[in-house]
Image (cartoon, rainbow over all chains, first blue to last red; front, side, top):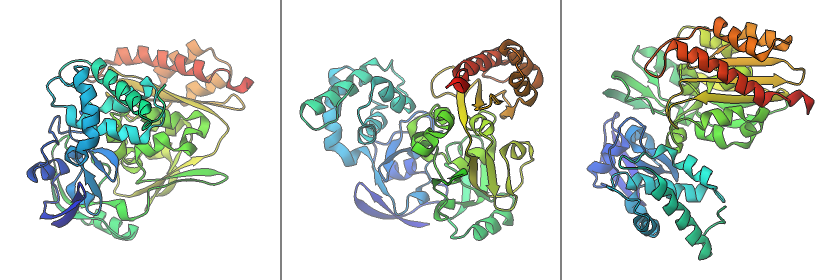
Length: 159
Length: 264
């Protein structure tokens, strides 16, 4: 099937199979930040935005994304950079394999939640599994990132 | 591995139904979260995205939830959050992660009648009905007993009622499938409704037990009655014996939570 996808604000017209999933399409087009993990909707490594909603590209049929706006980590480099500095400072990046999906989810959370408590942050990030260690460093990084935005007058108050 | 020969997003429900019944291996797409679990060959995958079934609306008597509504919308929508204490929103919030819930659809979740569903116990205690394209409106309770037939679930109907419902579950880790789950409703006249799911069979009402609770039986006695009334089984998440014991714990916890409602 011929489909036109809007990926990171650029239109791409291509042939896809009806059973092709966005993870495969995006990787074949060179968006390599989108990682394959469980491939069964469980781990969050492949998280991207479709129409600004965070979804799992491993089970999102490509044909269903026709006419929608797809965003990968490559499309939000500047926003992501601000957060990844905090991830590095907190030693939270580990092997880095889960980082793209995790970063996309944190940026989605920032847009969606107002004034999130630590419990709400943890709940929102529940679908992102890290294979290396625990999540303490990641949560510290998220909190410090949100606090820094408040300090710069860019963010919303953190409890 | 999943293969799909053709993808169609029909413009009308009639067209969707005709496509569905045209071949045995034509099926309606839900959120596709579980599509890669197991192997299947789909001839025509039918997407309901053009049928305007993505809604949560209310009137004086009912709340209507369209089949194409996501579980995330159930979790955050104020109508659902405020309905009888928000048991539905609470139940779905445990399901995998926010990314998954942004994809998973109400219609597919209910129609598939999964044993591990975190949605069905809450819907059952709130007397939900389903509207099917061919089958018409029927109680969810009866729908869950029926054999699978090719049909299209159009919406879930929640009658408005006064009372409070709670959802509770036991799972090994956050986001995992439940070992056992359940919901309890307590109405203004101290009437109770109890449903237990992930037994590991699909959720079911414990009708004799809830009647006993209404007539003043102690919660310890009722918890034992629920275990006698419903059938429990063993799978990789837990044994029958473990589920039976944990069911009693859930019943008591939920009873504590709804406890003082009639005194308010």
